[in-house]
Length: 312
Image (tube, rainbow, N blue to C red):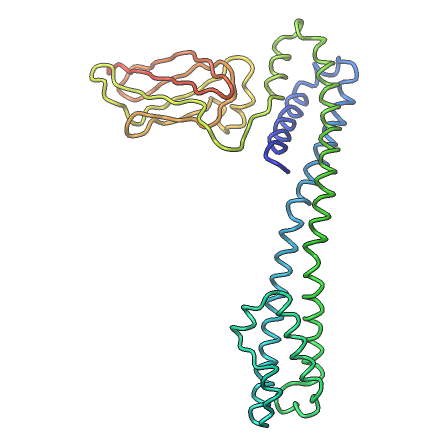
């Protein structure tokens, strides 16, 4: 999946969770539950398809690498034994044909590796009855030929894998379109209670908002200083508590009380990603009076939150 698709699937999962927690409200909305069920099944299918797409070429490449390593070991071993035979028997024509080192085998392209291993196999096959004392026999030849065949098959696998990946990519487009239809129909149902249940409506809108998780950019930046000296304060606990519709983000952060940061040595703190909304920000440090302020965070914009603390 693309980064945008991953961002979208994250927002859909958050939306589904929100709707399931508010089942008492959604149960009264016409056709909402049917479309939610369609969305859930489609999201599950999207995730499964995305996993297949992600693992496909990676698995093919790993298998091919294993088969190449195996063929290098077998081919170089057979070539080394044949070289010993040709040297001792003064078979110089044969020596010129199969005198490959392990370095040569490692440097060969895939095609060269396959072809030169086949040359080694064929050369041994012609004089197989003379090679028993050189540890080359029908069994070792069969193993080598099998490795050649397996590696040859793996050489076409990436092309087949690319085709399969293309098909999965097209399938994802269809699935995301299906999810979009289900979400659009859910949105139409929710519009019916926009005014009568504003809390649910605002929470629904916040849950379904796509949070971009590609290249990280700062959402919030700030510095905390001491009021009396204007010196930066290290170790100040800065807590962002959502006001109204952004509780989902706080739950996802793993801290039920809010999103918590600590100021660094120079009194600064950064938050890379924070859902847009209104937050109550609490600044705390032992020996200092607490300070609070309310801030508005807009998606895609940097919010600067500075504070000063009075020493007790």
